[in-house]
Amino acid sequence: MILKILIIDDDYLVAFSLQKVLNKLGFETEICTDAGKSFEMIATVQPDVILLDIYLTTHDGLDILKEIQSSYFQIPVIMITGYSDVNIAVKAMKLGAFDFLLKPIDLEQLQMTLKKCADNLFLKYENQKLLEVLSSDVLTPEFFGKGKSISKVLNMVEKLSKSDSTTILVQGESGTGKEMIAKYIHQNSPRRDKVFVTINCGTIPRELAESELFGHEKGAFTGAAQKTKLGKFELADGGTLLLDEIGELSLDMQVKLLRVLQERRFYRLGGEREISVDVRVLAASNKDLEAEARKGNFREDLLYRLDVAKVIIPPLRERKEDIANLVHLFIEEFSQRFSKQIKGVDPEAIEFLSNQYWRGNVRELRNAVERAMLMVESEELKVQNFGFLKKEDDKKVSDESFVLKVPKTGIKIDAVLRSLILQTLEITKGNQVKAAKVLGLSRSKLRYRMEQLGIEVTKSIQ
Image (cartoon, rainbow, N blue to C red; front, side, top):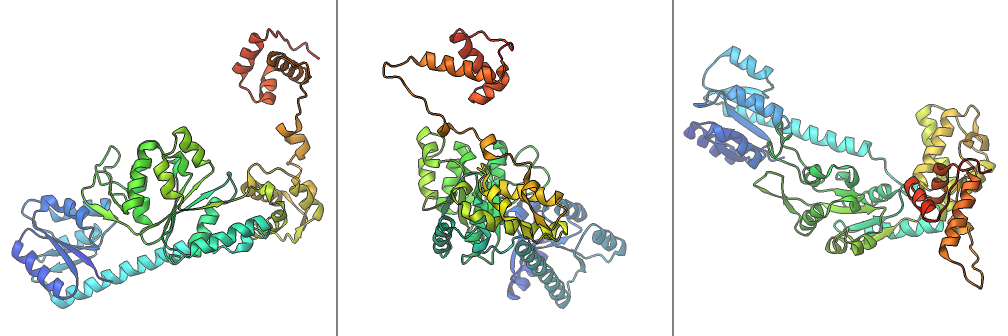
């Protein structure tokens, strides 16, 4: 691991001599002889280690140390001084200095200290990698189901995964598992040993979107006074970045994103140095982005850049053959989490679950199994454990079940609407709030229609 070292010392001869020695030892070095520009240099150089003189002409090195510790992700700082003062050394170490060296610097001691820095940094890197692996379970095809439709999707995904750079757009209803498919793509790609980073574009406040994606420098805006922030693109460097619910990004952010996708370069908010990254970008949306582009809500040029390859995940209601497999997987998951010995699920319960509509798709099914598992006291899940789910016939109001027969002589639309509203009010016993809900209207819109059609109704309707 080659360390990048920044030397902050306003004695040019000392700084230059240190740089010359360290360069010969194979380190990358930069020097800063103006203490007032220390933080500007740190932001520009982004060093792995800082060598900082305590007694600077215009600044106190300990004050700079404090600021570095609070603002720059705890970069290891090795303090150097020409004065042998034990109290200062102790104070520096308490403030978080990695080590303390006296001038003239002993080269062997400096090398040992830098080796310790390198070892610590490498250990942190390896721990971070391990945490990423542990927090991201390895997915197998069985996780998604074994039906024909999902198997077809997985077959396509495995082929697309072979590339380490192709941008892929994953589309599907909410809860179908778009993020899981994206993670599966990453785990089967050449970048599998690198980081997988995800950001939900729909949850980012509009004013913070640029900072979340590209990062910001200290002081770039109100609230950015504490430290430099790395954006998701930098955090995902070398790995894969999933832009979930990308259809929620504002048009101005779509313009900025398009440039980054094309050039793989960007500036942090408030930054002056262009940053290059090597990231594979995946995008996901529950919206029809082509339709959104036609409406002017999504840029066509960005859509073409994202839609190099497309994966469409079918809703759960179109692959009910996967429900039994998914239920068993969830039972296994929650048995471990809740320390319960659940051996399986009754076939009648599977049939009941297969007949549900599952508007929330796999996510809704998983939540249903979790709730049942919390309450069950037997060793098998049965239909009654899912009593909180209504039968679909009782729950679902399907437009497909309604058939309007138009008489050959014709009929005015106002007459149809009047009859429909009156019938609905009769069912709700004159309760206009309930009637509006049944008809899929707002309360005010129903009132407007009633006034328009001359309908005067009270709760006396039976």
